[in-house]
Amino acid sequence: MMTRYLYLIRHGRIAFDGGVKRCIGLTNTPLDDKGKKQAQLLHQYFKDKDIECIYTSPLDRCMQTAAILSNHQNIEVVEDLREIYMGEWENKPLSSIKKTLTSEPIYGEGRKRALSRFSKAVDQLIQQTTGNIIVVAHAGINCCYLAYLQGLDIDTSRALRQPYGCINIINIDTMQVEQMGIMSEDYPSIDTCLSLLHLHQVPENIIQHSIAVCKEALFIALRLKEAGLNLNLDLIKSSSLLHDIARTKPDHCEAGAKIADKEGYPLLSDIIRQHHDLEIIHDKPTESEVVYLADKYIQGTNKVTINDRFSQSLAKCHNDEAREAHQRRYNQAIEVENLILKYINKEG
Image: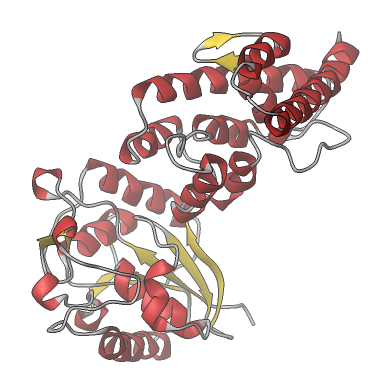
């Protein structure tokens, strides 16, 4: 007997009036151009999958996503799949709301009541079908349902990963969440990477640096592939473009890894986390070493040598501890460079 799956989807990105992010529950807000592209990517993801029916929340952002996803075929609107009503927070700018991980509006629907009607609706959809189904819904109610299925506290469910246009894969036979908050593409495209950099307000000089690092990383990777190494160019391209997405934040490597994960691209997280300091140097160069070395070669947008890069940064070390850490990083960079050059020179 074939395993049945429930694909729980969050609608694509929405257009906020004036670009001001608001707290929206039942407020009707359409998809923006990026959201429509995300729905098109969902269409590509599902076009070869056997889907019995697509169910959607009655709100426009979900109905638009479902229509594009399905090519306007076989959609059923279900009222109880709607988002949580946000009461006095409804349609208010997020900046004006004192919102914490666990807080709720006093006059809103509330997580527990919303989860009750949503889970009952989903159970009914599962019972009336025999194949795989898609449910297009919203971040808030999706997070409550996913927390419920995993035995997590729904009062902190807001912390779960649920980016626009993401997919949650639930095994209907066991009601286990097999994958949560993943995007329809494993690796974001160049356009998506640039959109994410702008979304997270990365300064233009850092964006230009990231583009230069990406070009250098792909150059190194292609040389290594010519030498016979099997490297994932898409992973290298996207992780190098996003390696400094949190450059202006404290502990930017860890912060950047968390952003990549939260945006639905967990495969990028480890490379971003290690682009400043590698946790391990492999016997053969991997995508992590390639992005790491490319970042060391690019200062601003200019290519430099390892010696030049570290001789300039040494001046910023004002005590023995900082100089020891600098020497350790220099030694690691030289070790990675020698490893990669060993394989490239083999090919030559």
